[in-house]
Image (cartoon, rainbow, N blue to C red):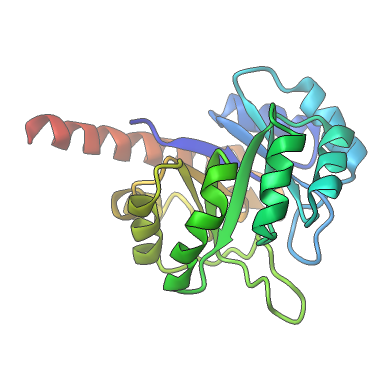
Length: 228
């Protein structure tokens, strides 16, 4: 299976074009957050989602925590996918599925320990995929993504095995470590921001190196499967 690549923190139509040209399967568009890099105005998010051609997906990263507020945010920005970055109440997740049945819904799980797996039953019936990140939602200033830190991939691997939903892996990924990440976790997709940036700007060379490392690792795993 080909590992999908989601480039997050897209800040402009130009960055969207660079990411798509570089091989991104999805773009992450960060709305207002309590902390972290890359937030842009809802108007810019809407401008970018209007320009991105299929089959590239556009992910709205929202910090809203109620179904009504998330739904309003979706309607203001028109993404193909909403990425809920807070551990919202399961009742709100269920309600969001009813309010926005035609929008793909991805629930972020912040991996702080093995208890992350306990959240699978709360969300799995109401979302299309999970995204494992390295935030600290209960910190004095909540960290809901964009930390640049890797978490315990052994927990992420166990999470992937424990759910039938596709799982994206985020947190501190780069061309230097992505092969190990894929081999250990076997995620459906990868999500990164700082790992393909230089001085805050999307770096085409870093993106090309990351995409090449992913493709080479996928080919290596496919070859090993055939031999086995």
